Length: 102
Image (cartoon, rainbow, N blue to C red; front, top):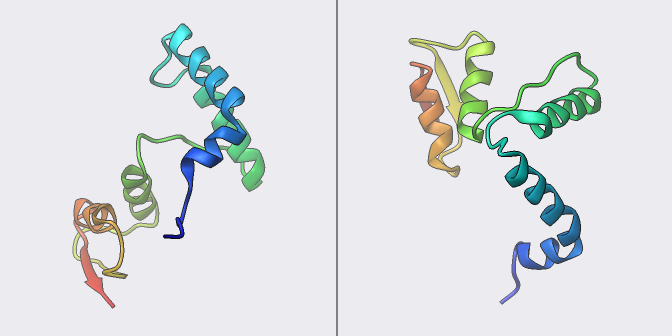
């Protein structure tokens, strides 16, 4: 079998960096927000060429916030693929709009 994604192999290439970052979070007990999140938001904003970027709890929250920021809400139709993770449709429903699969 050919693996689509070998996370173990990828981790091994950056193991020291990942382990150091995890240790810093554990030692600082900044499991929510904290210095690392602030740094990530700043780096993402710079990369995207925008003034601000906001880290959220999950991809589901990111989709929901994008829908709301786009003005999508109750009664609106959001066209999406049925070949996606359930969180996509969940976010559409949470925004009080209607998912239509194409």
